[in-house]
Amino acid sequence: MAGKAKQLLDAGVDTLVVDTAHGHQESMISAVRAVRALDPQVPIVAGNIVAAEGVRDLIEAGADIIKVGVGPGAMCTTRMMTGVGRPQFSAVLECAAEAKKHGKHVWADGGVRHPRDVAMALAAGASNVMIGSWFAGRTSRPATSSSPPTAVTTRSPSGWPPRVP
Image (tube, rainbow, N blue to C red):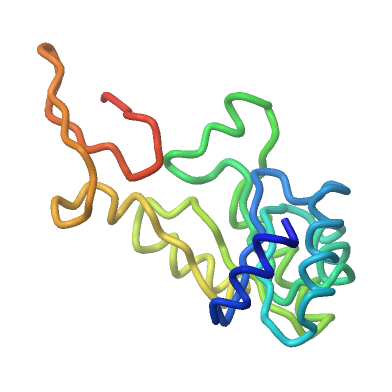
C-alpha cells in the first residue's frame, strides 16, 4: 500500500483515497498510518465505515475525510454477501457528528436513488455525496454493451461485473 501511495505522490497527486468495503479493521488503520507517514500534508480519504468508533480510529490513524456507507450503493453486494451494513442516513448522522468533534468531514458513499437522498445526506452532516448509479447507465461513459438473447441491452460499469435486470 505505501509503495503505491509513494508512486502516486511522486507523480503529483494531491489527495489519496484508501478504500475497502469494511474500513473499520486493523489492516485499514495500519494502511492509513503507513500512507500518512509518507506525507503529513496530503489529504487522505479513508473508508468505508458506519459508526463513530470507526471515524475516531481512522482519524487517529491520519485520515482527513471519512467515507460513510457499507451496503447502500446500487452495485454494492456487501449486505447480501456478509449480512453487514447500516441505513445510510443513520450512519452519516452518527459519523458526521463524530468527525465534526475532530474538525474533519465525512462523505456519504452510496444510497442515492432519488434527489431527496442527496439532501438527506447533506442534512445529516455529509460534506460531499458520492453518486454512481445515476451516471452508470449513460451511453456517454466508457463501457461494453451486451444484449443476451432474452434480455434488454445492458451496459456494464467499468470495473464492475455485468448485471442483467
